[in-house]
Length: 205
View 1: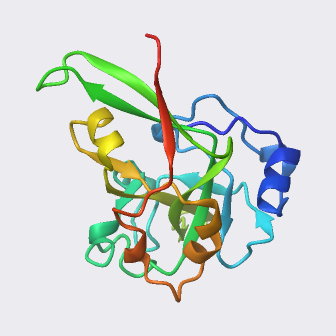
View 2: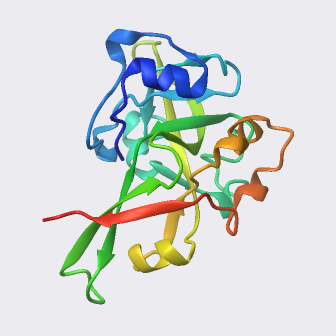
């Protein structure tokens, strides 16, 4: 994914203030396996854009950080079934982004691929649906805050692009961002066919 916008732009778009400007991430490309601290907005503090949460969710019961490589994403269809997510479906956040990336396989085994960059059709800056948790390091007693991006079945456009797994992150419509943060709303309502309008471009290799 990417988050290229400046603090003033992000604060204006989401009507919230960045909590720690010195750790605010701006990047053309954020690799999930770097477990970076990506700006998010939590349901509990919608007036604040927090920079303390790492991409790659570490459940509160995990033994160590190694777990996070498996939880960059969370499938919306199985949130209630997975021990990593079942108790935190009401702990929701907005993951702030300017684009995300997916691979199109040109053959059955993915020996050759084409990379696509996906943007929101209406706004340069948008929000992906996320869930979050806090883990206490048993060695140090320090808190580690993290999140996962919630994914759903691909819409027709993304089904072509992400033709191997046919999945996509839930790109929220601007008018539904507050609804996602409200745990009184059933998260299943945001599964496909719910989808925001998007545009995609092939990334030159």
